[in-house]
Image (tube, rainbow, N blue to C red; front, side, top):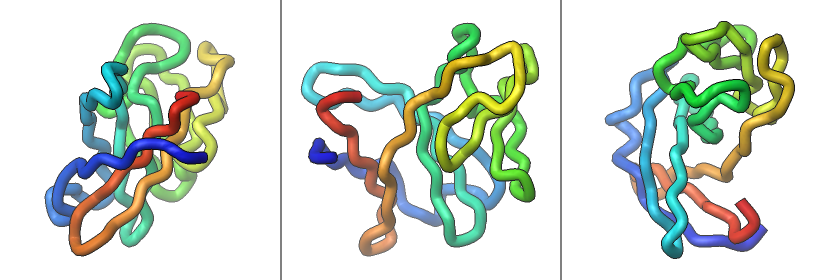
Length: 113
């Protein structure tokens, strides 16, 4: 995937086992992204639950299962794939490439997102 890269924040601003929401604009398109840090691993996925319009970053992260829970209705989403793992959600949320360079967290937003 080729897209635009944006810097989100310094890595040390992300708490281990926590999700943080970022609202970014790339090429005039708004994206709401939840970024989760689990130790040295980072995950970035669409922040809006595919079942209802609620922020996933406000939900609980399960580091052992690699999931994030929608706080409103309890749907679980895979951090790695964005797939909905439990009802009521049935559709995945998008996932994004995320990397750390020189202590900064970078996100790549594809043109097909």
